[in-house]
Length: 327
Image 1 (cartoon, rainbow, N blue to C red):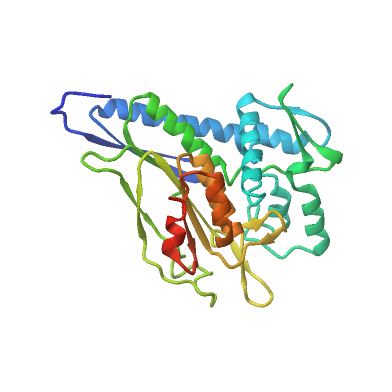
Image 2 (image 1 turned 30 degrees about the horizontal axis):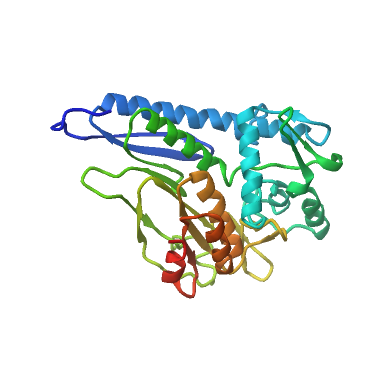
């Protein structure tokens, strides 16, 4: 999408609702018609992936797995199979802190389509038994997925689907010659291509506390009113995870958020916000969730397994060192 040196850069914005959120793109170049065409093609790709990956769409690969893999192998598209293999690898690389097989736990806590509730002990025990990659068999020979022991499971790609979709959308923009663009899905995951004209990078405001009227912010918990940080992005992705997306108050008045530790089946406590920067949005989505689960002690291990990682945690006893630990 190059033009003459004197061409004035144009800015084109496109947006679409998909995956239960709003995807927006800002594209900069010298041919607005070509920019818009590339942006619409990228949004079409996100919609296509929603049809393939959403557990709420009966004909999607993920919905078919959840409905039938306890009875026998379910054949899925090669693309979905590769994404599940990647998700399994990311689970291993994050010491099981990220796990797309934890759907039964999310359902037990009432976070599938709801704000949550305290599960009965036997319900939670059953959910833990139905979760985990040890229960999932990926057969690369025939491209099938099945659950062991004929027990139902629940794959949920909600914590990685937006990042994967943004990676694919960014690839379409690159192939179309777009060198400067900013993409986000629901503001929790951002992908930066190149930089705006005359700049070295895109600058993103990273806020790490709920709004003043949010239930968590008014529940008596300690949330520092941290001012947004200025984060520089260029050809990389930023993902943020927080406990305040969905939450409920327990009998003692405390608030329990929707992010669960898949190793214990319990809501994350202590850390309220985590953000990471990595080259891939698929990886940044998964690692931000894992960092929220692992807390500050998990930073060295994640840094070793994900080269180039930059990260933030709140609360953190030393914010600056946590932000620089991945450099």
